[in-house]
Length: 105
Image 1 (tube, rainbow, N blue to C red):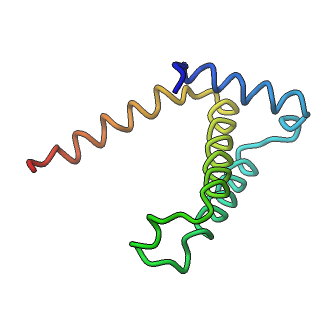
Image 2 (image 1 turned 180 degrees about the horizontal axis):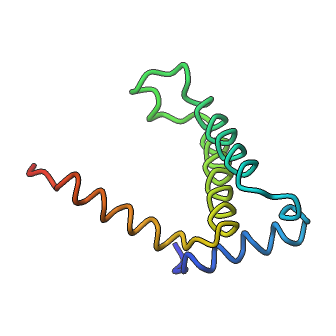
Image 3 (image 1 turned 90 degrees about the horizontal axis):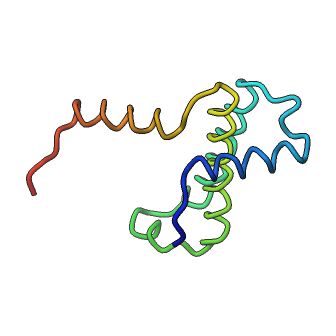
């Protein structure tokens, strides 16, 4: 795996979307709905499988594509709202760490 910064990936996504005119009519409502649609498409690959079968992904490429679509939507939303994805994820993890301390195993 190559070393990268999350900001590099954010820029790649933003440049890709800009070059296709996909950002012209973006708004938080539509992008949030798009994320939900893509998440639904991800769930379709698991909807009728039991838990043990869900570990045996038969359509790994299709699942990977849907994960990427959800991620691209999330990055698009953070850019649109001028949020730093790295910062907000770290803050959330700190909040969760306080609410759910580590367990001894």
